[in-house]
Length: 382
Image (cartoon, rainbow, N blue to C red; front, side, top):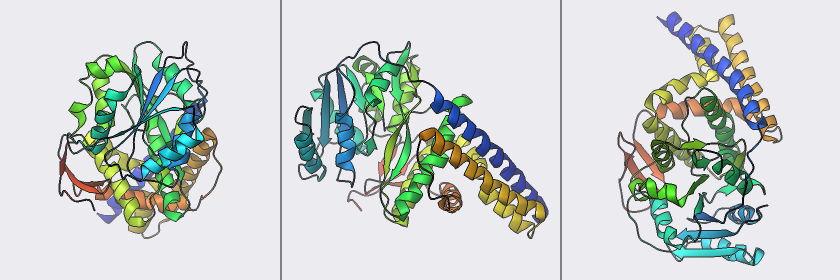
């Protein structure tokens, strides 16, 4: 029995090794494509819900004000509380970019447990333009971001544009470990899923759409109970018969987890979100963890040569994926030693995702039902 389990783990490791190598190639091909360029530059409203201050918040917001985009741009920021620390960064943003059209909405109304969607609903009546770009506060973009997003939105039959994202860690050990999750598990997984026609992504880091499209999916009110509201919005647009596209560039997502507990909670929420969205795909993603499976094969086979060789091959495949991804994203090679450590942590989080449906989001605790709907466990923030 133990020998059979060792061979089963070895087979899973072999699949994972093949996946790591092939996904690295696919990432390179994806980002080598040219982005569609706009045929016109319509006015745009950038909608940013804010909650609390983060180390890089001002830099992230400033990157949206430094766009190589000749059309008019309105910046719409929203908070639930007039004492929210994020408003200090908006004040600094106004001083840095006095010509920018910046509006701030302070509105405490909630329409459901998804506080982010409630925040956006409070902002939308103040949006002046027909093109809406929703973007999370922890996102940093390059100067050609808006030009590329609008170019993709103007291609035929496209109803929504979303963007891949890479991890941009704050200083410290845990943010750097968090970035490994984004860059070498999440991003290659999405690219591979897109290449194979298996992924149907939509990410809150960027959701660009026309107001008419938003109206036709019923606005945002239907999503106030969703944990993965971004995914649900993408599915609603697809049900209209319109495409959701992912252009060949990545925005930067701030990795700010400052402790093991915060990192584990964040990744566990993401893992349980995926389990609710795509249960079979989430279960199958176990095979994308070659290092843990190879290690289990080595332990169960009492250090057999074939199993120990698999461990080396698995680590080598993951290193190759990192090198290929770093080259595609044009980012420096560093923290190579953290990769095997993250692989073990990631597998532990994957296993833990099956044992509860409780998540912590912005300091609030929720249960998630089988349809991905949120119900609050407690009213007081943690």
